[in-house]
Image (cartoon, rainbow, N blue to C red):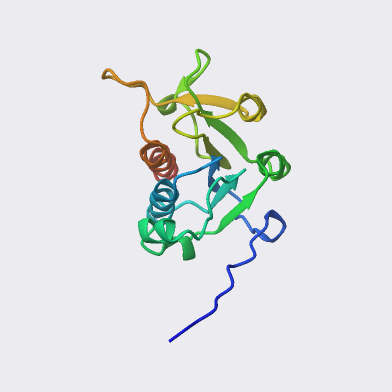
Length: 172
């Protein structure tokens, strides 16, 4: 048996967000396994969309599909230039939170994610680019209690997404 399939053509212009969206944004994701794990979190939490800025991996890489256990097909997923994604979110009045190791970052538990929210994460090796950090409305951090200074991007995305969902459910 042989099948030829076309990947879905998903763009920011065709993405429909609800009035109070929760979005995960990944800048320059390069590991298909991390992308798949983020998509599993996005489905489980749930979040309304996953936006990939300046992707360094094929969104439909077999490893991404495998790691997502099929969630690549259940979560709205769009790849676009990072600047376009941040402009799109600003146009939609979605508040952007850059997850970054900076002195000005606020603990994620101190932030209000009840309104339209985008959680913006970078690569494990480099984090977010300075341009992406500067374009976001606020900077957040997951305080580390051990010896390391950060989590795997998929784990960090899960912590932040489930905190946002927790706050939204508590405020309902």
